[in-house]
Amino acid sequence: MSATDRNLTVAHAEVKAEIARTDTKTALLLAFVGAVLASAWTVARDLPLNLAAYIVGGLGLMLLVGAAGLLLQSVRPNLSGRHGFPLWATLTAEEIPSAVTSNLAADIAGLSRLAVAKFTCLRRAVDLTRAGGLLLIVAALITAGGAL
Image (cartoon, rainbow, N blue to C red):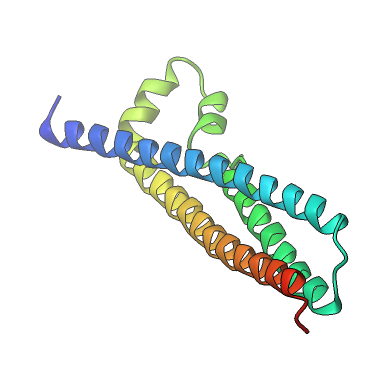
């Protein structure tokens, strides 16, 4: 195996590992967002809320639902066939070794674009989760303090 082949193999493994890490982070954040949504709904249902708390809390919940949507988009399977499982499913056992050898650089490029797209969705979801959580805290403070 040449140095170029080894470098391609290492780069391919690194990109796949980054996708796995991003998917793990996404799964944890999706569970967290789901728990926050369920908790906020349970708490808000039993409290007497004023108009300001409804508005601020509702905006916070909408941001959290938006974050959940981004997280689900991030982990949505890509079945376009450019790389990965769908490609391998269309090849015979004899065609796979040559496809892997000749297309490793293209696969690295495709997986890298996929990793960046997943990371971008995750980053946006984290931003929405932070903003939504802040609005829920403000809504709780409004309710507790009876402001507005």
